Length: 310
Image (cartoon, rainbow, N blue to C red; front, side, top):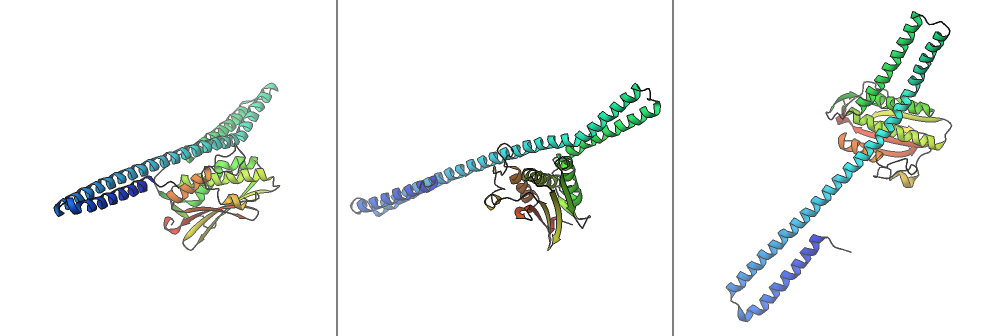
C-alpha cells in the first residue's frame, strides 16, 4: 500500500535524523567536545524543523488542490442538474401549452366557418377575439409561472408550505394529466408556514414528482397515483411524496442519492437530480431527504425541523 506523501517524508526524516545523531554520538567520543556536540545537535534540530515545515506545506498544498477539485466537480454536477431540469421544463411547457393552442386553433377555425357561411357578425367576432385573448393571456401566465419558478431568490423568508407544493404541482400538472396519472394532496394545516427558500423547496418537489411520473410510466400500472402527504409531529414536519410504481430494489435504493447513479434506462437520467435535491434540503433547509419502499411504490420523505417553521 502506498503511503501518503507527508507520511513518507516524515518517515525518511526520522530515519535520517536518528542516523545522524547516532553517528555523531559515536565519533564525538574521541573527536568532539561537549560544546561541539551541543552545536551539532542544534543544527540537526533546525534541519528537522525545516523538513517538518516543508512537509506541512506539501500537505496543505495537497489538501487545497483536493478541495479545489471537489468544488469543480460539485459545480459541474450542479450545471448538469440545471440542464436536465431545463430540458424537463421545456417538456412541461409543451404539455401546458398543448391544450390552449388547440383551443386557439378551434377559435380561428370557427371564425373561418362563420365567414364562409355568412354568419360572422360583430357579436361573434367580439366573442371570438375575447376568447382568443383570454387563451393567450393564460399562456403568457404559464411562462411567468415557469420564470418565477427558476428565479434564484436567495433570501430566506416566511412562506406557506401549501403554496410551495401547489407551485411545484402546477409545473408538472399537464404532463401528469397527459400520462393519465392521478394526484392527491393531504395537508390538514393549510396555514403551515416555513422560513427558508420557497423556490428551492418547490424545485425539489418537482424533481420528486418527475421521478415518480417516470417510474409510473415505466411500471405500466393500470391506475397510476402520486400522493403528497404532510405530517407534523414532535417538532418536525415531514413531506412525503409517494407513488405506486412498483418500488426500487433494496440494492439500488441505498445508492439513489449518490451522484451519477440512476435507475432509469441509459440516456434517460443524469443521476444528479436526487443528489442535488438532497444537497438543497440538507445544506439550504437544514433538513433531511430519505427514501423507502412502501405500499407498492417508493416514498420520498423531506424532514424539516421545527426551528425552521412557524
